[in-house]
Length: 483
Length: 90
Image (cartoon, rainbow over the protein chains, first blue to last red):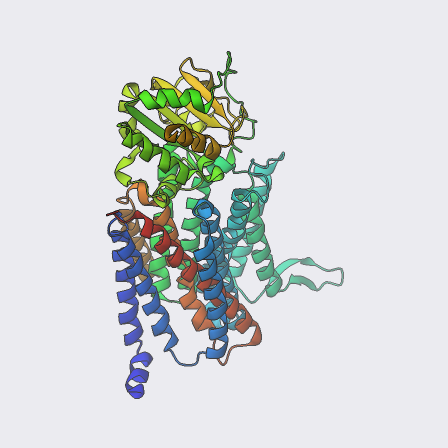
């Protein structure tokens, strides 16, 4: 049996068949992800494909199993424990970390390939070029994801970090990396001639210094390109980094000439691009604007100042209105996740339904910090997904809605996006919360949101502000209904 | 080289077609699920840890194996956890 296996492995037939099967499982898995009922099966199929690829690879001869076992054991333990423990509200930063981990793996794989085969003549040219790509994309993915994680988990300020000449510095970094990349591609072993010394001899940067320089530059680039992106734009940044992690794996696949890495990496690369595009469209902004404008730093203005006074209300006031309402729309935002209010909101929704009120949840595509963030939170709280309505589906019904409860959302319900041409978010499609007969905004204070843009919704005639922690407010509403 | 490009373009095209059909409700699990697939680097990393490799390559390879495993194992488990919540409630 083992002799047969040996023969199969030698002509690569077994691994080819297994890799094709894995690729098919990934494709079917992603296809089944298209519907809530089949999505879990899809994920399991995809995991099966991964397991198959790993097991078949382990059958190849010459592997050092004790070290492999160590790496797999450590990685799996860390991955499993974090996956089981993480709170649903912290999902964006979790995905960012896993993403970064994949990016760093691709960088290290490229580095390992270079240290073991960099001197071979075949390495020069195409292999050197794709190794360079794996290093640079993997490095950017890694540090970019770490910065995204730090911003999302508020380890650092979520506001854009800007400084004069920022785009020039970034362009210079990228250009230097590209020049080193070209030199590396042309001859990975030679090093770079940097000038002649006084004695007449050539001064040469050794090839390993060029390589290290590439690694350092890629890591710096990741930091530099993500710091100017504000917290509210994170759905775009995370989608893009997701795409990069796939492309890094793909480049690493070319470097080691492995078809399953190429195919799987390209699939993920494409998927990230599609999501990035959807997120940009939902904000009516170009990708370039999201990446480079430092949106929300206040530099671009905050729109026309709003005249008038916001009217405050207490949960008791809201109770009487909600009690008599026949249609209620709940518009959640990132604040729902921060306050961990999803379970309380579901309970309030149930009570309202029992009271004969029709309850819907209005989901804006960029509400929260990653694509689909609100859907996950509400699903965790067991809100039936028939009650979740997308922006385009809910807006025609807003004028006939008795009460709209805005929970921790700001920009996605800001009417300035519709009316005020000077507002930085002008043109972004929004949920027309202001069209409802009464609007309750649950908010900590009158502070502007993440993007620092003033919101005329708070000053509308039909708007009442209920200040305080969203979860406490919802809980006290529930109390009112129960007593 | 041409063949390599062919495979890449075809896979990207397939990815576009597959993902564009996913409803926005499932975008978070889709992202973490596809993120797990990008941990495929693990497969490449396994092949870098050979008995005849130099110490440096082994260290780099084993680190890549561990990081790839975090990405793969963590990614699939967390996606499964999320998707369990999306099933129809009886």
